[in-house]
Image (cartoon, rainbow, N blue to C red; front, side, top):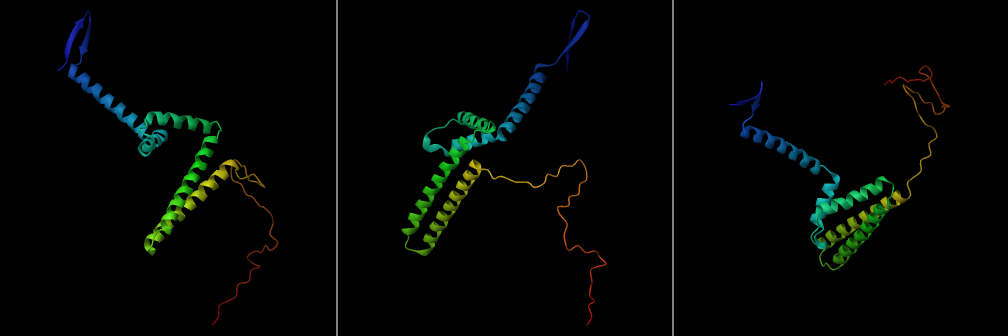
Length: 181
């Protein structure tokens, strides 16, 4: 039920306080849900949370602070400064090398074949990951150059003939032999 209060000739309808607060709480919940969805899908926030969880050896990490550092790195990359990326890739390769050595030493200490194979398999995976990381670093530092012989730029249908074949035959020239038994 709505109460009416007259001020001069204009009647002003007042909503009950409980109805106003219910509407405000629905709007606040929608805004909060939207903010949480934006935060949950943010690459920077996701990375910061993962780093905060896995970064325990460094002590307590504040994920918003980690997010700020990551945002600064993203900004550097957008501006063309790849030094942080190169640093990260090289240090990851060193970490993979350490993991490779750890599993290799553990494999040598085994007396039975099954645990030895397991450790060697993990060592080889770490070695392969190290190789791929170094390959990525090389690609970042020295991007491959593409030499294009032709640029196909058209604003509609386009046919490109990159040369004429010497052995062009029409249907009449082809001889199809019959299959007789």
